Length: 227
Length: 227
DNA sequence: TATGCTGTTTATCGAACGATAAAGGAACTT
DNA sequence: AAGTTCCTTTATCGTTCGATAAACAGCATA
Image (cartoon, rainbow over all chains, first blue to last red; front, side):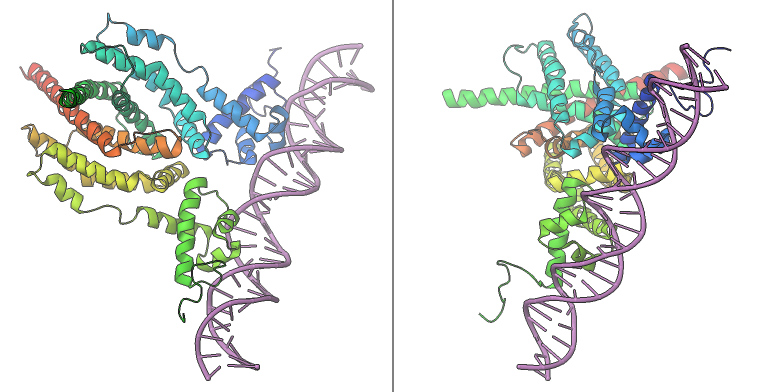
């Protein structure tokens, strides 16, 4: 037993800096997700079993540590394959949507993701708006067009606000599972995949019909005006 | 001009205690909705144009003031008539739901309601779970049964988790409008009433169909098991 | 075993926090 | 006009915060 002097066990003083930094970051993710940005560096250090000034050896300020926390939780979580999978017409649209939301839910429906996201929003950071603008451009427009194609509607031209809003609604219902569980502390369905499948099914039964009604009534409106 | 010495104008020092307390409460609602519970009493006092110790003349502690803030925003906001209106079968179910959610949205979709609700949840208070348990018992079960009746399904017996979850989904989509606007700082549809009508329409097209599928497949499952 | 490097702790600073005590001052009574 | 009431301010306490400086201590090298 020459290597690893006593690495993991007991008093782990004088760690390799890379390992210590990793511990700090992971501890900070859990800590700030629980207490928000106003959680104190002393309390965080106590949780990590180190002293508070040591944090400042690894991060120049609390804000720098928080930036690192956000990078850890939100960067590189989006899978580019999801977009091509959503477009794969060899698979029924309902299956595509169910699989996408099941995979996406695995990424976002966890304690850290949900709570840090809400803390950021309440703090007034523009992070949330930027993230959701990306989500809309990456997924919502795509989903709207696949639904149009499925129902023989024109896929060119801009997506109606109403179509986007109903897709927002599906997204909201799914994200709200995380809010209920991790922010309100309420129970959520045991079988998440089955729950998501149900939500997608209900969405696909209702959304195109409601949008269809809308477009019909718009066409009637236009017909009444022009003729 | 004997009365109202110079009541409203200029330096409003030495107010009637009732009026001063009202100003403090209203200011505190706006202030803590913006900054959360960690907003300082000094900053609040500065906003009110008074000194910080004066707050302690009217409230024994910061927590007592926060309790008053929550009472101000959340107590007596539920209109008992909503429940009988939801049950009024002289009105088409879609209209009943649209009107209910339009009225309910007027109550909850504002800066203070949405943000203080989220701050409370993140703080770990049980307020959110209690409120939503009430909402479910007061409205969700009722809505589920009205939908069942509309589709010729049995209205007795407990509501399925799946039915409740899809109603949660509609609620989530509506509440998320407030989250987008007041927490993320994003735009929302201009015409809220039209937007809500669209959401209810899509919900009513999809939810019963998805639940119907579910029950059918359960019946088939049971039929396969029993013989 | 002595020395140097550096990861870590102890000690501490100035600012901001919730809260309290005492002094000030406006409006009413006599 | 003097006195009383009580709304409001000034002054301040003890604590906790983020952050810094200096001392300490583990581990490798010589």
